[in-house]
Image (cartoon, rainbow, N blue to C red; front, side):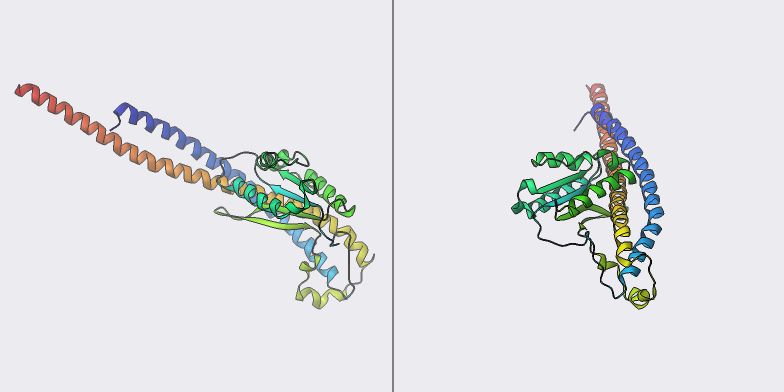
Length: 289
């Protein structure tokens, strides 16, 4: 059995660790609340933009765009979202594992035809270890989401797609469902499938609109906005998922520390009781001698 001094030292260490994990959980929880607020503030605008797209698409006139053009995939861009720091459970390892699977899927294209945009230090480090060159350093926006910088990435991807430098853009990120659930998501960014915005309700009244300028001109103006907004939405989604994952990880660590403290306290009490018993036996043995 460990000595009283050793057990007492372990108890002090676990108590200090518990204080740290508890404080980190509070910080992550506060950041999560802020991230949820950011998503909540943006959703009304996103919903209205999608509704407008749906109304434009509901007419009989077929609308095409350079951003909807589908062609044989010879060169692909992957935008993967992770965090800059660890201590968030399996958040980063999930992204890296799915990124590896995605790269293997496009392996026949050749390494030079797979462009990777890593949003976050952890995934950037993983990309480097895989032997790929990152298409930029985006650690800053992973920690502090910025619409301006995210829009610049979206613009670069759109331009490369229009110029046929890339044929497909795939997003890999965590979708925030709840504090306890973040779903790894793989989604096509380009070419965009605009038909998914059309609903039966839209089809029933979409043709009543008189559009000026033309439907095609409006779509060309709105689609880039929708794409920029989509990428920023994904960034906020990933950011909220990171804080949720860290909140849960620190909660679990705090609970584990509490369980360990209880076990160590029992061990300490048993050791102390054994020590007292031994001292009493020594005293009694000395008196009888």
